[in-house]
Length: 221
Image (cartoon, rainbow, N blue to C red; front, top):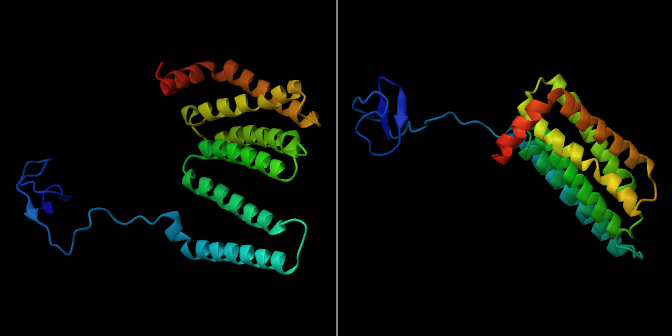
């Protein structure tokens, strides 16, 4: 590794001259080869917390399975405990990986919660509670949360508008479910569909140009 005394930067490779000022590079001490300071990730910052949380998850899962085996039951309820813990870690993984982009994080959580709710509903005999309540309520909360967070954190329009549009379009899905006759309870879906229409109308009226510009940029039109 080489070092430029004028630019005060380290250069990787076998260059003889600095790519910036073209001065001759000096050999850098082999023991001092760090180019950038180490930036701890969230896992390093909360290393102990995550270790304890993982251990607690494993302990709860094992204990529930052992109890289920020792005390026979008609159903394997311990699998639901393990599944719930798995769902928690899946949501946690999404929250951590998308933590720098809150609107995208919200959108990913909406999809995650909706899919998991439908899967749980199917696994427990399908009573339609997932599409009656969880899906429309999740979409409605997501639209409100995204709008509030955008205002509070002063996000630029381009940073959240595409996600708000997608979430608003998702909110029309419960309206489709109403016409298909799959729902037992219509009210949450009607509220969600109304919120979606209002949200899309407001976007078109007040931020239509920004929305079209962002859509063209994203879709390369």
